[in-house]
Length: 363
Ligand SMILES: *Cc1c(COP(=O)(O)O)cnc(C)c1O
Figure 1 (cartoon, helix red, strand yellow):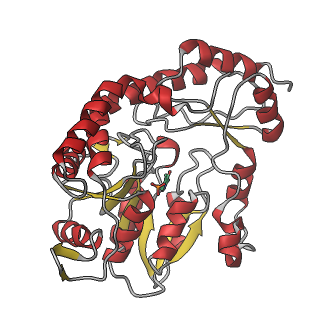
Figure 2 (cartoon, protein in one colour):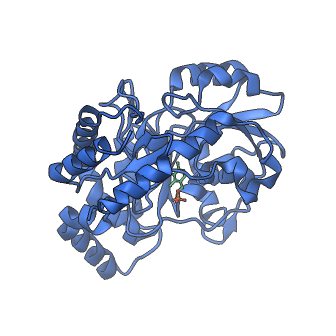
């Protein structure tokens, strides 16, 4: 049996370091917003080449808090890809703003810069590029449009820890970036955790208040904030795992190359191969016109796969009012995508077996 993701196995190499971290926190007697959070924030900001990192409770809060901090007029529009993860869209509506869904590039599955301009209106205030599956969006043309129209850029980097765009790291490619350390992410905690990175001093200061009831000084509240604090335990665990992130990502690349070289099937569409080195391969997503049959067949061979994602945001009941939009690219992708197992704990033998199985699926 090959599970899609066995987090116990993924965390095994970090067991001693994690135990030392949790022990340190237990014995410190200090559990919320202390030294561990400060140390992780400093380390992760440096890793992302960003000036500030603000730890928060989860990835959805990270995105939502930035959009709130910008204080756009109610009803302002934010451009996001139509095949984005639901949390990216939720952050926009939770901040009282309006998502404008733009179809993705059919090759990279990322926000298509050539479709952005047509979606810009007098109410547009920001673009939210989601670095889906571990690959950075094409930020140069997106940045040019943002500059031309005076729009802010909020990266959704929740699947892109360590990803590069040219020589720059994700988290340092816009005005701010939202991160998730949900256990299954490339850098995963042992519970919920998130962060924001930014080079903007004033924004960072405001976010530090917003995550903590709008307060920077105890019992003095400058804003109507949230409670969205990263706790000491998760921060200490993340500090234990951060030094291994690059090696973990490199292992993902090795496995991705094995898939890319090994899978030969006339009906399978492989992910783009032009940025193998910059991509951090959070997911290895193939496409097949009979996705459901392929998934069932692989399950019969003991291989668990997953679908990211089965229903596009505009077809969710939560966004009923968007249901009749015509977004054929997103709809087709959601019917065809299939994620094969890919994580640092997967062995060469397991990947070889998965490749063989895919190749033997009837054409
Ligand atoms: C995981 C994820 C989020 C949300 O993160 P949580 O910590 O689960 O709130 C947002 N966007 C993307 C692209 C994600 O993969």
